[in-house]
Image (cartoon, rainbow, N blue to C red; front, side, top):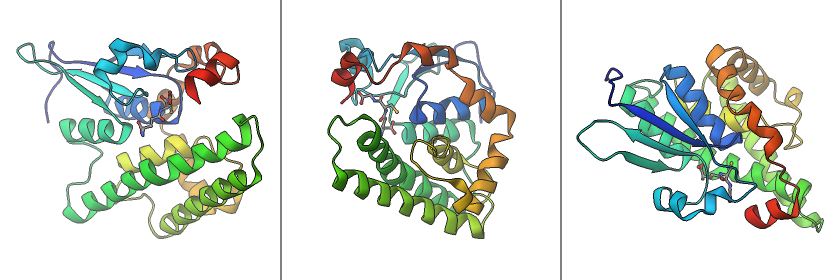
Length: 231
Ligand SMILES: N[C@@H](CCC(=O)N[C@@H](CS)C(=O)NCC(=O)O)C(=O)O
């Protein structure tokens, strides 16, 4: 655990989307001051050469940690890696016991490799694809629902995904926040609904989801320009 020093600055490269919110929520939970750097993904800012130099995956979120005056800053992409880095650096929201630490990583990877891509593709084929491909719409919707069922089964057994509230819950929350866009009614998943309501009551979570609210009107995902940059 460290205390914030004058040399320590966090810069969050961000756009208000599920993967972006995961990091703004964690930074708010940690009560760490940070600079928010908007990256308008609908305008293609993520493809700018200086962005790619820092964040090879050409996507938000990205984190730069100026951790000491003597060393080069650390640049990190992939939301799961960023959550893990911050939780590890501050020694919070990452369980200490071996059992729960691995449960936490398991659910974190499940979100990054499963729930996120499936829910994202479900929304894409249903909402943005110009051609309505029934097979793709159905396939991703079913996968998305399967992931909500898996989450429901776990949350019927435990209040959080891995012991206490952790980065696993934060990662999943970033996506469940968009359940309406995934065409998922939470009333069919009562344990998820209760978990969601509890987390949405946290002040830090509210601040995390408020981050970049002023940017939302600047990013229309349905214009020709945005489609070219994104899809
Ligand atoms: N696996 C990546 C996914 C990041 C991602 O998909 N970011 C989206 C916004 S939520 C993005 O920047 N899209 C821009 C693009 O694909 O050009 C992560 O978890 O960080």
